[in-house]
Amino acid sequence: MSGYELSPQAILDLHEILTYREEHSGIDAAEELQEQILIAIERLVVMPGMGHRRSDLTELPYFFHGVNPYLIVYARETDPLRVLAIVHSSRNVRRLLKQRFR
Image (cartoon, rainbow, N blue to C red; front, top):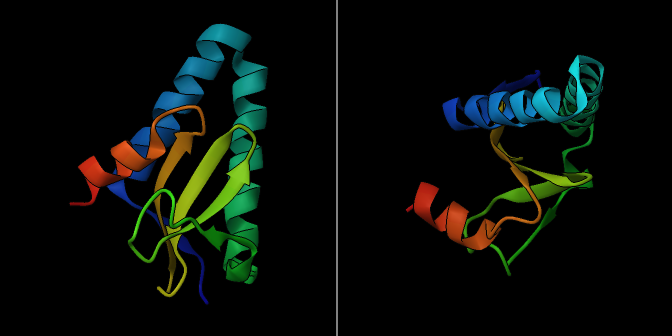
């Protein structure tokens, strides 16, 4: 597998997450979180099986990997690995994914 790509929605998700973190916890915390998320995605490229299906959240063939408290939603059978969303686990993830991926 050769790298990864963030969907436009995943880019927006990441931007919103990091903006919120910076506003509430400072630039250092936002940069640390960004690094954690990007490292996790890079690990998924090497080992896409690290994530798992969540039939309780979607019937679509997407996989989930946690970077506490966020969920990285991705398609593992694509090349490059495609990150579809990055969402806070406290949100109604099922509803959010249904709205985004009808």
